[in-house]
Length: 259
Length: 323
Image (cartoon, rainbow over all chains, first blue to last red; front, side, top):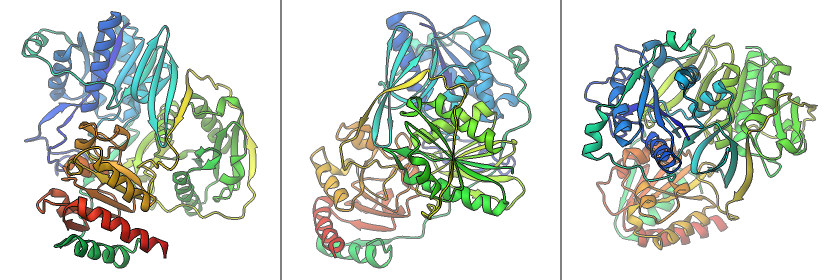
C-alpha cells in the first residue's frame, strides 16, 4: 500500500516568536529553531508501520520555503523513502486551500497513486487543521480529521477520532486523507545510521508550472501579527491551607464574581 | 456581502451551545450589513429546525433523512453548500467544535473560499472582513484579511456571546443536496459516560498536572470539577504518565479551551500548556512552588499544597453553591 505523507516545518514549540517589523504577518526567523511539525511525526510513524506490514512506499510531500529541507531530512531519517518538495514562494505563501491543491497535484503527478494520504492533525505554526480536507477535496476523495487509531481492511480504513463527548468510529473508502493525532502511535527517533543514510535519499523539487497549478490571487492575507493582550497582574495567597482557601473563596465571589 | 449562512450543530436533537454563539455573530453581522441571514441544520429529521429558528433566524434550511443521522463531511458539506446556494450566501459561519472545524475545512475547499479557523474576533467595520485568530502556540494573534469572494469561518467556542432564544417561527425550507455521496461514514459513536463534560465546552475546568502525583490524585480533581459542574483537564505531563486519558489534555498537543474559570492544580504552566488555556477568563493556580511559571500568569495564585487546599475548597464551594 503506497502512502503519501504531508510534511511541514515549523518553529520549535518553545521558541520565543516575535513579529518581523520588516515583513508584516511573518515572524523574525533569526535564532529560531525549526523542527518537523510534531503532529507530522505521528503521520510519518503510521505510514512506516503500515508500509512495513503491508509493503509499498511511504513518500513525503511538502510545500515550504528553502529552510524546510531540514524537516524533510528528519522525515527521511525516520524512514520515508523519498520526498517531493514545492519551494516556490508563490506556493508556500498561498493560503491553506491553495496549498492543498498544490499538494494534491504533487501527489497525483509522477505516477504515484497512494491509498492513504496522511498528515498531522494541526500545523502548529498557523494552528490550522484543515489540510487533510483541502487535499481530499482537491483529489475528490474522503477525509477524516484527528485520527487516534487507523485500522485497514481491504479498500476501507476504520478511523477512531474524538469529538466533544464521544469517540467516533468512521469507515472511509480508500483512497482517503487522514490527519493524525497524538495517541495514534509513538513516533520513532531516527538512529545515527538512519540520519546518515537519509542524506542520500532523494528530495525532488517540483515547480508549480510542472504541476500545472496556478495559485491565483491570495484568498486571505495576514496583515499583522500582534501579541495577545497581557493578563492583568494576579493576586497571590500564601499561608495555612484554610486561610489560603478563604482568600480564594473571597476572590471568586467578589473579584471574579463567578460564585 | 450578499448573504450569511450559519450551520447549527445539534447533539441528540438539541442545538449545541457553541452554535448559539455562531448564531449570535451571524445575526449581529447580518443586521449591521443589512444582508439576508439563514441557518442550516442537518439530521435524521427536521425537528431541530424550529429550535434553530428561535435563535434569530427567519429562515432555516433543513436537510433531513437517514443520510444525515450521523455527521459526515461529504453529505453535510453538500447540504450546507446547497443551502448557501439557495440563499446566495458568500459568508459561512460555523462554531469551531470538532465537527464544525471538519465541515469548515471541506466546505472552504469545495467552494474555493477563504478559510479562517478558530476565530476569536471579527471586525466588520472595514470594507473587507478582518478576523483575529491565535497562531504560533497562541503566542501571537494573526490579524487576517479574508479577500476571497466567498468566506468560511469557524468561531472559537466560549468567546462570542450566545444568541438569546426568541419567540420566532422560522420558515423551514427542506433541501435535498444532489451529490450526497458518503465515502467516510460514522459506524459507531461511543458516548462518554453520563455527567462527564468535555473540556472544550465546559465553563469551568479543573485541571491537574505532575503535582497531582498519580491517578488517585485525579480523584480530588474530579471531585472539585463535579462540585463546580465543570470538566476535568490535565497537563501533558499527567497524560504522558498515563494518569488520565489523552482526551483530557489541555495545551499545544491537546485541546484549546476558553472557560470562564480554569483551576490549575499542580501544573507548572509550560508555554505549551498556556497555549491551550491562556484565553480563559479567570485562571486560578494552586501550586506548592511559588516560582512555577503558572503562578505569574494566574489571576489568583495559591501557594499551597493542593492535597490540603483542594478538599477544603471543594467543601466551601459546595456550601456556597447550595445557597
